[in-house]
Length: 128
Image (cartoon, rainbow, N blue to C red; front, side, top):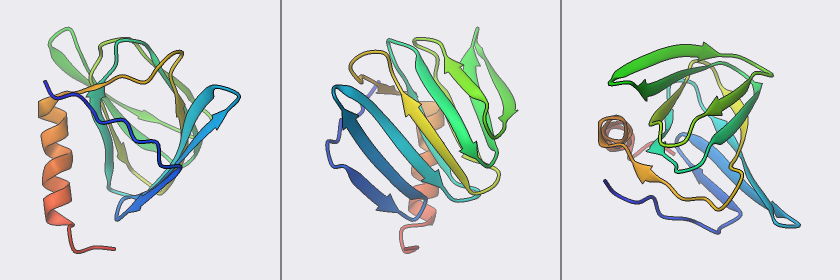
């Protein structure tokens, strides 16, 4: 497994959308805008991850008990991803989501999901 690099830049943008990182009195969270059809995550964490979809619809895939569980998540749904559960978000519409963790951010890539994202990156390298 490959550890996920931690970035401190407050803003990141690419062909998939944007990530805004906030640290308010030690509470760290991200606000992500993701364009329709693009994926995020492909990792897992030793602590739970929490997400709220502010607008749009995601397809969320979790790898639990040796199988992939796929579900749709909609606006104003709270998502709780248990510790050490690989997850993958695919935007079914343009979406805005908040994510946070109840402790320091640590993550490792789950290669089967991350490979899907890497393939999408290769296919879209020239898109701005």
